[in-house]
Length: 490
Image 1: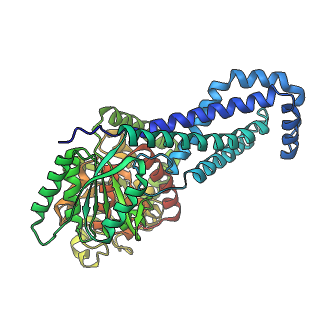
Image 2 (image 1 turned 180 degrees about the vertical axis):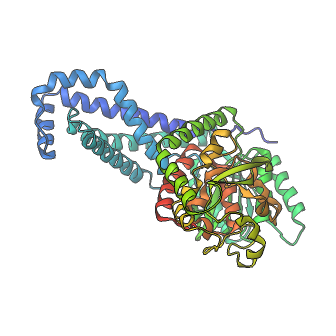
Image 3 (image 1 turned 90 degrees about the horizontal axis):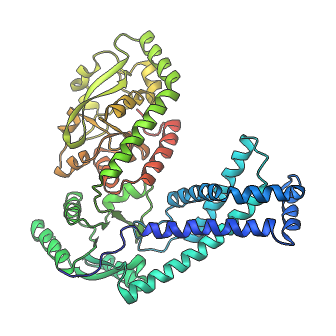
Protein backbone atom coordinates (compact mmCIF):
# COMPACT_ATOMS: atom_id res chain seq x y z
CA UNK A 1 0.00 0.00 0.00
CA UNK A 2 1.17 3.54 -0.75
CA UNK A 3 2.64 5.55 2.10
CA UNK A 4 1.11 8.80 0.82
CA UNK A 5 0.25 11.36 3.46
CA UNK A 6 -3.37 11.55 4.55
CA UNK A 7 -5.25 14.67 3.41
CA UNK A 8 -6.28 17.21 6.01
CA UNK A 9 -9.40 15.82 7.68
CA UNK A 10 -10.67 19.19 8.84
CA UNK A 11 -9.76 21.59 6.06
CA UNK A 12 -12.71 23.76 7.07
CA UNK A 13 -10.91 24.63 10.31
CA UNK A 14 -8.26 26.51 8.32
CA UNK A 15 -10.98 28.35 6.45
CA UNK A 16 -12.77 29.11 9.72
CA UNK A 17 -9.55 30.48 11.20
CA UNK A 18 -9.06 32.84 8.25
CA UNK A 19 -12.69 33.97 8.56
CA UNK A 20 -12.22 34.75 12.27
CA UNK A 21 -9.03 36.67 11.50
CA UNK A 22 -10.89 38.60 8.77
CA UNK A 23 -13.64 39.68 11.17
CA UNK A 24 -11.05 40.69 13.79
CA UNK A 25 -9.05 42.68 11.24
CA UNK A 26 -12.09 44.43 9.79
CA UNK A 27 -13.40 45.27 13.28
CA UNK A 28 -10.19 46.95 14.39
CA UNK A 29 -9.59 48.66 11.04
CA UNK A 30 -12.98 50.32 11.31
CA UNK A 31 -12.44 51.00 15.02
CA UNK A 32 -9.19 52.91 14.46
CA UNK A 33 -10.54 54.74 11.42
CA UNK A 34 -13.74 55.60 13.29
CA UNK A 35 -12.24 56.78 16.55
CA UNK A 36 -8.51 57.41 16.07
CA UNK A 37 -8.04 59.14 12.74
CA UNK A 38 -8.23 62.78 11.75
CA UNK A 39 -10.80 62.17 9.05
CA UNK A 40 -12.71 59.32 10.71
CA UNK A 41 -15.14 61.53 12.64
CA UNK A 42 -16.12 63.51 9.57
CA UNK A 43 -16.42 60.41 7.43
CA UNK A 44 -18.64 58.48 9.83
CA UNK A 45 -20.76 61.51 10.64
CA UNK A 46 -21.46 61.76 6.91
CA UNK A 47 -22.25 58.05 6.77
CA UNK A 48 -24.68 58.41 9.67
CA UNK A 49 -26.41 61.31 7.99
CA UNK A 50 -26.67 59.31 4.76
CA UNK A 51 -28.28 56.50 6.74
CA UNK A 52 -30.77 58.94 8.26
CA UNK A 53 -29.65 58.48 11.88
CA UNK A 54 -28.38 60.92 14.46
CA UNK A 55 -24.96 62.52 14.52
CA UNK A 56 -22.85 60.69 17.11
CA UNK A 57 -19.77 62.88 16.94
CA UNK A 58 -20.30 64.35 20.39
CA UNK A 59 -20.20 60.85 21.94
CA UNK A 60 -16.83 59.90 20.43
CA UNK A 61 -14.91 59.18 23.69
CA UNK A 62 -17.72 57.07 25.16
CA UNK A 63 -18.23 54.97 22.02
CA UNK A 64 -14.46 54.52 21.63
CA UNK A 65 -14.15 53.02 25.11
CA UNK A 66 -17.25 50.87 24.62
CA UNK A 67 -16.17 49.32 21.31
CA UNK A 68 -12.67 48.62 22.60
CA UNK A 69 -13.94 46.99 25.81
CA UNK A 70 -16.58 45.00 23.87
CA UNK A 71 -14.29 44.00 21.01
CA UNK A 72 -13.91 40.33 21.99
CA UNK A 73 -17.67 39.82 22.47
CA UNK A 74 -18.66 41.64 19.28
CA UNK A 75 -15.99 39.93 17.15
CA UNK A 76 -17.22 36.53 18.31
CA UNK A 77 -20.83 37.57 17.66
CA UNK A 78 -20.11 38.79 14.12
CA UNK A 79 -17.91 35.75 13.42
CA UNK A 80 -20.62 33.35 14.54
CA UNK A 81 -23.23 35.09 12.38
CA UNK A 82 -21.23 35.20 9.16
CA UNK A 83 -19.67 31.75 9.55
CA UNK A 84 -23.07 30.08 10.01
CA UNK A 85 -24.17 31.83 6.82
CA UNK A 86 -20.96 30.76 5.06
CA UNK A 87 -21.70 27.15 6.02
CA UNK A 88 -25.32 27.36 4.83
CA UNK A 89 -24.11 28.81 1.52
CA UNK A 90 -21.60 25.95 1.07
CA UNK A 91 -18.53 28.18 1.27
CA UNK A 92 -16.55 25.68 3.34
CA UNK A 93 -14.89 22.96 1.26
CA UNK A 94 -15.54 19.88 3.41
CA UNK A 95 -16.83 17.85 0.46
CA UNK A 96 -14.00 19.00 -1.85
CA UNK A 97 -16.06 19.80 -4.98
CA UNK A 98 -14.36 19.33 -8.35
CA UNK A 99 -15.98 22.37 -9.98
CA UNK A 100 -15.28 25.99 -9.13
CA UNK A 101 -17.90 27.73 -7.02
CA UNK A 102 -18.86 31.36 -6.53
CA UNK A 103 -17.02 31.71 -3.24
CA UNK A 104 -16.47 35.49 -3.47
CA UNK A 105 -20.09 36.19 -4.38
CA UNK A 106 -21.38 34.01 -1.54
CA UNK A 107 -19.08 35.73 0.95
CA UNK A 108 -20.50 39.09 -0.14
CA UNK A 109 -24.04 37.72 0.05
CA UNK A 110 -23.50 36.27 3.54
CA UNK A 111 -22.16 39.59 4.86
CA UNK A 112 -25.11 41.45 3.33
CA UNK A 113 -27.57 39.03 4.97
CA UNK A 114 -25.78 39.36 8.32
CA UNK A 115 -25.89 43.16 8.10
CA UNK A 116 -29.62 43.06 7.29
CA UNK A 117 -30.19 40.71 10.25
CA UNK A 118 -28.33 43.09 12.59
CA UNK A 119 -30.45 45.99 11.44
CA UNK A 120 -33.68 44.01 11.86
CA UNK A 121 -32.55 43.08 15.38
CA UNK A 122 -31.78 46.73 16.20
CA UNK A 123 -35.20 47.76 14.92
CA UNK A 124 -37.19 45.06 16.73
CA UNK A 125 -35.29 45.50 20.01
CA UNK A 126 -35.47 49.32 19.72
CA UNK A 127 -31.71 49.36 20.17
CA UNK A 128 -30.49 52.88 19.36
CA UNK A 129 -27.21 52.54 21.19
CA UNK A 130 -25.03 51.05 18.43
CA UNK A 131 -24.05 53.57 15.74
CA UNK A 132 -25.38 52.08 12.48
CA UNK A 133 -22.35 53.46 10.64
CA UNK A 134 -20.05 51.08 12.54
CA UNK A 135 -21.78 47.91 11.33
CA UNK A 136 -22.52 49.22 7.85
CA UNK A 137 -18.79 49.70 7.33
CA UNK A 138 -17.47 46.65 9.19
CA UNK A 139 -19.41 44.15 7.06
CA UNK A 140 -18.27 45.32 3.57
CA UNK A 141 -14.67 45.58 4.80
CA UNK A 142 -14.99 42.09 6.28
CA UNK A 143 -16.22 40.72 2.94
CA UNK A 144 -13.19 42.17 1.14
CA UNK A 145 -10.65 40.97 3.72
CA UNK A 146 -12.26 37.50 3.85
CA UNK A 147 -12.03 37.12 0.07
CA UNK A 148 -8.38 38.21 0.07
CA UNK A 149 -7.47 35.85 2.94
CA UNK A 150 -9.27 32.95 1.26
CA UNK A 151 -7.28 33.58 -1.93
CA UNK A 152 -4.08 33.62 0.12
CA UNK A 153 -5.04 30.40 1.96
CA UNK A 154 -5.86 28.58 -1.28
CA UNK A 155 -2.58 29.75 -2.81
CA UNK A 156 -0.62 28.43 0.18
CA UNK A 157 -2.51 25.12 0.09
CA UNK A 158 -1.89 24.78 -3.64
CA UNK A 159 1.85 25.21 -3.10
CA UNK A 160 1.84 22.76 -0.18
CA UNK A 161 0.04 20.16 -2.27
CA UNK A 162 2.30 20.52 -5.30
CA UNK A 163 5.67 20.74 -3.54
CA UNK A 164 5.18 18.87 -0.29
CA UNK A 165 2.24 16.51 -1.00
CA UNK A 166 0.41 18.01 1.98
CA UNK A 167 -3.40 17.66 1.76
CA UNK A 168 -3.21 15.74 -1.51
CA UNK A 169 -6.30 13.52 -1.98
CA UNK A 170 -5.19 10.43 -3.91
CA UNK A 171 -8.21 9.28 -5.91
CA UNK A 172 -9.17 6.21 -7.92
CA UNK A 173 -11.40 6.93 -10.92
CA UNK A 174 -13.73 4.11 -11.96
CA UNK A 175 -15.51 4.27 -15.29
CA UNK A 176 -15.05 4.64 -19.00
CA UNK A 177 -16.36 6.75 -21.83
CA UNK A 178 -16.94 10.50 -22.10
CA UNK A 179 -18.00 11.00 -18.48
CA UNK A 180 -14.80 9.53 -17.04
CA UNK A 181 -12.67 11.42 -19.57
CA UNK A 182 -14.42 14.68 -18.72
CA UNK A 183 -13.86 14.21 -14.98
CA UNK A 184 -10.22 13.24 -15.50
CA UNK A 185 -9.56 16.34 -17.64
CA UNK A 186 -11.31 18.59 -15.13
CA UNK A 187 -9.39 17.20 -12.14
CA UNK A 188 -6.00 17.14 -13.86
CA UNK A 189 -6.43 20.70 -15.09
CA UNK A 190 -7.63 22.28 -11.84
CA UNK A 191 -6.49 19.82 -9.12
CA UNK A 192 -9.55 20.94 -7.12
CA UNK A 193 -8.95 20.91 -3.35
CA UNK A 194 -5.95 18.63 -3.82
CA UNK A 195 -7.84 15.83 -5.61
CA UNK A 196 -5.30 13.86 -7.65
CA UNK A 197 -6.17 10.84 -9.78
CA UNK A 198 -3.52 8.20 -9.05
CA UNK A 199 -5.24 5.20 -10.64
CA UNK A 200 -8.18 4.44 -12.89
CA UNK A 201 -10.02 1.39 -14.11
CA UNK A 202 -12.77 0.64 -16.59
CA UNK A 203 -15.91 -1.31 -15.79
CA UNK A 204 -17.19 -4.27 -17.72
CA UNK A 205 -20.70 -4.89 -16.42
CA UNK A 206 -20.93 -8.12 -18.41
CA UNK A 207 -18.77 -9.73 -15.73
CA UNK A 208 -20.31 -10.72 -12.36
CA UNK A 209 -20.52 -7.59 -10.26
CA UNK A 210 -18.87 -9.33 -7.29
CA UNK A 211 -15.68 -9.65 -9.36
CA UNK A 212 -15.88 -6.01 -10.40
CA UNK A 213 -16.33 -4.96 -6.77
CA UNK A 214 -13.32 -7.03 -5.74
CA UNK A 215 -11.22 -5.29 -8.43
CA UNK A 216 -12.28 -1.87 -7.15
CA UNK A 217 -11.27 -2.80 -3.59
CA UNK A 218 -7.95 -4.13 -4.88
CA UNK A 219 -7.22 -0.86 -6.68
CA UNK A 220 -8.12 1.16 -3.59
CA UNK A 221 -5.76 -0.92 -1.46
CA UNK A 222 -2.92 -0.91 -3.97
CA UNK A 223 -2.99 2.85 -4.56
CA UNK A 224 -3.60 3.83 -0.92
CA UNK A 225 -6.49 5.94 -2.18
CA UNK A 226 -8.18 8.58 -0.05
CA UNK A 227 -11.24 8.85 -2.29
CA UNK A 228 -13.15 7.00 -4.99
CA UNK A 229 -14.91 8.57 -7.97
CA UNK A 230 -17.22 6.45 -10.15
CA UNK A 231 -18.34 7.69 -13.56
CA UNK A 232 -20.51 4.87 -14.86
CA UNK A 233 -24.16 5.69 -15.49
CA UNK A 234 -25.17 2.07 -16.02
CA UNK A 235 -24.63 1.12 -12.39
CA UNK A 236 -27.87 0.28 -10.60
CA UNK A 237 -28.77 1.71 -7.19
CA UNK A 238 -28.02 -1.66 -5.57
CA UNK A 239 -24.56 -1.81 -7.19
CA UNK A 240 -23.80 1.76 -6.14
CA UNK A 241 -24.76 0.97 -2.57
CA UNK A 242 -22.37 -2.00 -2.58
CA UNK A 243 -19.57 0.32 -3.70
CA UNK A 244 -20.47 2.83 -0.99
CA UNK A 245 -20.41 0.04 1.59
CA UNK A 246 -16.89 -0.94 0.55
CA UNK A 247 -15.78 2.69 0.77
CA UNK A 248 -17.31 2.89 4.24
CA UNK A 249 -15.32 -0.20 5.25
CA UNK A 250 -12.17 1.58 4.04
CA UNK A 251 -13.13 4.81 5.80
CA UNK A 252 -12.92 6.89 2.63
CA UNK A 253 -15.43 9.18 0.88
CA UNK A 254 -16.85 8.56 -2.59
CA UNK A 255 -18.20 10.69 -5.39
CA UNK A 256 -20.80 8.89 -7.50
CA UNK A 257 -22.03 10.00 -10.93
CA UNK A 258 -25.50 8.59 -11.48
CA UNK A 259 -29.00 9.49 -12.66
CA UNK A 260 -30.19 7.49 -9.64
CA UNK A 261 -29.22 10.45 -7.47
CA UNK A 262 -31.16 13.08 -9.41
CA UNK A 263 -33.68 13.15 -6.56
CA UNK A 264 -30.92 14.42 -4.24
CA UNK A 265 -29.96 17.27 -6.55
CA UNK A 266 -33.41 18.15 -7.88
CA UNK A 267 -36.04 17.41 -5.23
CA UNK A 268 -33.79 17.70 -2.14
CA UNK A 269 -31.92 20.62 -3.74
CA UNK A 270 -28.54 19.48 -2.40
CA UNK A 271 -25.72 21.27 -4.18
CA UNK A 272 -23.61 18.92 -6.29
CA UNK A 273 -21.06 18.94 -9.09
CA UNK A 274 -22.78 18.44 -12.44
CA UNK A 275 -21.18 16.44 -15.23
CA UNK A 276 -23.15 16.96 -18.44
CA UNK A 277 -26.32 17.48 -16.44
CA UNK A 278 -25.79 14.41 -14.22
CA UNK A 279 -25.12 14.97 -10.49
CA UNK A 280 -21.80 13.81 -9.06
CA UNK A 281 -22.87 13.33 -5.45
CA UNK A 282 -20.44 13.25 -2.54
CA UNK A 283 -20.78 10.61 0.19
CA UNK A 284 -18.54 11.38 3.14
CA UNK A 285 -16.57 8.81 5.08
CA UNK A 286 -18.50 7.33 8.04
CA UNK A 287 -18.02 9.12 11.34
CA UNK A 288 -18.00 7.10 14.56
CA UNK A 289 -17.55 9.88 17.09
CA UNK A 290 -18.97 9.39 20.57
CA UNK A 291 -18.64 13.12 21.33
CA UNK A 292 -20.69 14.11 18.27
CA UNK A 293 -23.37 11.59 19.20
CA UNK A 294 -23.50 12.94 22.73
CA UNK A 295 -23.76 16.53 21.48
CA UNK A 296 -26.58 15.57 19.12
CA UNK A 297 -28.42 13.77 21.92
CA UNK A 298 -28.11 16.75 24.28
CA UNK A 299 -29.26 19.08 21.50
CA UNK A 300 -32.25 16.84 20.77
CA UNK A 301 -33.34 16.81 24.41
CA UNK A 302 -32.92 20.56 24.85
CA UNK A 303 -34.79 21.52 21.70
CA UNK A 304 -37.52 18.89 22.17
CA UNK A 305 -38.15 20.24 25.68
CA UNK A 306 -38.21 23.80 24.37
CA UNK A 307 -40.61 22.92 21.54
CA UNK A 308 -42.97 21.14 23.95
CA UNK A 309 -42.98 24.21 26.20
CA UNK A 310 -43.57 26.69 23.37
CA UNK A 311 -46.13 24.55 21.54
CA UNK A 312 -48.04 23.41 24.61
CA UNK A 313 -51.12 25.54 23.70
CA UNK A 314 -51.19 23.93 20.25
CA UNK A 315 -50.80 20.45 21.73
CA UNK A 316 -53.63 21.07 24.20
CA UNK A 317 -55.97 22.50 21.55
CA UNK A 318 -55.30 19.56 19.18
CA UNK A 319 -56.03 17.07 21.96
CA UNK A 320 -59.34 18.78 22.83
CA UNK A 321 -60.47 18.92 19.18
CA UNK A 322 -59.70 15.23 18.64
CA UNK A 323 -61.56 14.24 21.79
CA UNK A 324 -64.64 16.34 20.97
CA UNK A 325 -65.01 15.32 17.31
CA UNK A 326 -64.45 11.55 17.19
CA UNK A 327 -64.48 8.49 19.39
CA UNK A 328 -61.21 6.92 20.50
CA UNK A 329 -57.99 7.91 22.22
CA UNK A 330 -56.26 11.24 21.57
CA UNK A 331 -52.88 9.63 20.92
CA UNK A 332 -52.28 6.99 18.28
CA UNK A 333 -49.63 4.46 19.28
CA UNK A 334 -48.02 2.30 16.63
CA UNK A 335 -45.03 0.01 16.43
CA UNK A 336 -42.31 1.49 14.25
CA UNK A 337 -38.90 0.12 13.28
CA UNK A 338 -36.03 2.26 14.48
CA UNK A 339 -32.24 2.22 14.60
CA UNK A 340 -30.63 -1.16 13.94
CA UNK A 341 -34.12 -2.47 13.07
CA UNK A 342 -35.27 -2.31 16.70
CA UNK A 343 -39.04 -1.79 17.16
CA UNK A 344 -40.42 0.94 19.40
CA UNK A 345 -43.78 2.59 20.08
CA UNK A 346 -44.22 5.90 18.24
CA UNK A 347 -46.78 8.52 19.27
CA UNK A 348 -48.95 10.66 17.01
CA UNK A 349 -52.18 12.58 17.38
CA UNK A 350 -54.96 10.34 16.08
CA UNK A 351 -56.07 11.59 12.66
CA UNK A 352 -58.22 8.60 11.62
CA UNK A 353 -61.33 6.93 12.89
CA UNK A 354 -60.78 4.47 15.72
CA UNK A 355 -59.42 1.04 14.60
CA UNK A 356 -58.51 2.37 11.15
CA UNK A 357 -55.50 0.01 11.04
CA UNK A 358 -57.86 -2.91 10.58
CA UNK A 359 -58.94 -1.53 7.18
CA UNK A 360 -55.45 -1.40 5.64
CA UNK A 361 -55.80 -4.76 3.87
CA UNK A 362 -59.09 -3.67 2.30
CA UNK A 363 -57.55 -0.43 0.98
CA UNK A 364 -54.28 -1.94 -0.28
CA UNK A 365 -55.38 -1.73 -3.92
CA UNK A 366 -55.74 2.07 -3.59
CA UNK A 367 -52.16 2.59 -2.36
CA UNK A 368 -50.59 5.49 -4.32
CA UNK A 369 -46.99 5.23 -3.10
CA UNK A 370 -45.98 1.97 -4.74
CA UNK A 371 -43.94 -0.72 -3.04
CA UNK A 372 -42.57 -0.09 0.44
CA UNK A 373 -45.05 2.60 1.57
CA UNK A 374 -48.79 2.88 2.13
CA UNK A 375 -50.24 6.30 1.30
CA UNK A 376 -53.64 7.42 -0.05
CA UNK A 377 -54.32 11.10 -0.76
CA UNK A 378 -58.06 10.92 -0.07
CA UNK A 379 -57.95 8.32 2.68
CA UNK A 380 -61.56 7.49 3.70
CA UNK A 381 -60.40 6.66 7.25
CA UNK A 382 -59.39 10.28 7.91
CA UNK A 383 -61.41 12.48 10.27
CA UNK A 384 -62.17 16.13 9.57
CA UNK A 385 -59.86 17.33 12.33
CA UNK A 386 -57.29 14.75 11.23
CA UNK A 387 -57.06 16.30 7.76
CA UNK A 388 -56.28 19.68 9.30
CA UNK A 389 -53.69 18.20 11.68
CA UNK A 390 -51.92 16.42 8.81
CA UNK A 391 -52.17 19.50 6.61
CA UNK A 392 -49.80 21.34 8.99
CA UNK A 393 -48.02 18.23 10.41
CA UNK A 394 -49.42 18.94 13.87
CA UNK A 395 -50.15 15.21 14.22
CA UNK A 396 -46.38 14.59 14.38
CA UNK A 397 -45.75 16.79 17.44
CA UNK A 398 -46.24 14.03 20.09
CA UNK A 399 -43.10 12.44 18.66
CA UNK A 400 -41.23 15.04 20.71
CA UNK A 401 -41.91 12.60 23.56
CA UNK A 402 -40.15 9.89 21.55
CA UNK A 403 -37.18 12.25 21.23
CA UNK A 404 -37.06 12.72 25.00
CA UNK A 405 -37.22 8.93 25.48
CA UNK A 406 -34.31 8.43 23.06
CA UNK A 407 -36.26 6.39 20.49
CA UNK A 408 -36.05 9.22 17.96
CA UNK A 409 -34.07 12.32 17.05
CA UNK A 410 -35.32 15.64 15.74
CA UNK A 411 -33.76 14.84 12.36
CA UNK A 412 -33.20 11.41 10.84
CA UNK A 413 -34.83 8.83 8.53
CA UNK A 414 -38.55 8.49 9.14
CA UNK A 415 -39.44 5.30 11.09
CA UNK A 416 -41.84 3.08 9.16
CA UNK A 417 -44.53 0.66 10.38
CA UNK A 418 -43.76 -3.04 10.36
CA UNK A 419 -46.02 -3.50 7.33
CA UNK A 420 -43.77 -1.17 5.29
CA UNK A 421 -40.58 -2.56 6.84
CA UNK A 422 -41.53 -6.08 5.73
CA UNK A 423 -42.11 -4.74 2.22
CA UNK A 424 -38.49 -3.72 1.58
CA UNK A 425 -37.56 -5.25 -1.74
CA UNK A 426 -33.79 -4.62 -1.96
CA UNK A 427 -31.16 -5.44 0.65
CA UNK A 428 -29.68 -1.94 0.66
CA UNK A 429 -33.00 -0.47 1.82
CA UNK A 430 -32.21 -1.72 5.33
CA UNK A 431 -29.23 0.63 5.54
CA UNK A 432 -31.68 3.45 6.30
CA UNK A 433 -31.89 1.93 9.80
CA UNK A 434 -28.24 2.66 10.56
CA UNK A 435 -29.20 5.96 12.17
CA UNK A 436 -31.67 7.08 14.82
CA UNK A 437 -35.03 7.86 13.15
CA UNK A 438 -36.27 11.44 13.18
CA UNK A 439 -39.36 13.62 13.22
CA UNK A 440 -38.23 15.30 10.01
CA UNK A 441 -35.74 14.35 7.31
CA UNK A 442 -34.68 15.05 3.73
CA UNK A 443 -37.66 13.08 2.44
CA UNK A 444 -40.05 15.25 4.50
CA UNK A 445 -38.73 18.47 2.96
CA UNK A 446 -38.23 17.17 -0.59
CA UNK A 447 -41.76 16.18 -1.52
CA UNK A 448 -42.67 13.75 1.23
CA UNK A 449 -45.49 11.48 0.09
CA UNK A 450 -45.00 12.71 -3.50
CA UNK A 451 -41.75 10.70 -3.57
CA UNK A 452 -41.76 6.93 -3.76
CA UNK A 453 -40.08 4.55 -1.34
CA UNK A 454 -37.03 3.98 -3.55
CA UNK A 455 -36.19 7.69 -3.64
CA UNK A 456 -36.90 8.03 0.07
CA UNK A 457 -34.25 5.37 0.77
CA UNK A 458 -31.75 7.15 -1.48
CA UNK A 459 -32.31 10.39 0.45
CA UNK A 460 -31.95 8.56 3.76
CA UNK A 461 -28.66 6.96 2.72
CA UNK A 462 -27.35 10.33 1.55
CA UNK A 463 -28.30 11.94 4.87
CA UNK A 464 -26.74 9.19 6.99
CA UNK A 465 -23.44 9.43 5.10
CA UNK A 466 -23.33 13.23 5.09
CA UNK A 467 -25.08 14.20 8.33
CA UNK A 468 -23.75 17.34 9.98
CA UNK A 469 -25.09 20.28 11.94
CA UNK A 470 -25.16 22.28 8.71
CA UNK A 471 -27.34 19.73 6.91
CA UNK A 472 -29.55 19.42 10.01
CA UNK A 473 -29.99 23.18 10.14
CA UNK A 474 -30.95 23.31 6.47
CA UNK A 475 -33.52 20.55 7.00
CA UNK A 476 -34.99 22.40 10.00
CA UNK A 477 -35.37 25.62 8.02
CA UNK A 478 -36.94 23.79 5.10
CA UNK A 479 -39.25 21.87 7.44
CA UNK A 480 -40.86 25.17 8.45
CA UNK A 481 -41.48 25.95 4.77
CA UNK A 482 -42.79 22.44 4.07
CA UNK A 483 -45.20 22.62 7.03
CA UNK A 484 -46.55 26.03 6.06
CA UNK A 485 -47.16 25.03 2.44
CA UNK A 486 -48.03 21.37 3.20
CA UNK A 487 -46.00 20.00 0.32
CA UNK A 488 -46.71 16.28 -0.04
CA UNK A 489 -48.66 16.20 3.25
CA UNK A 490 -51.48 13.64 3.23
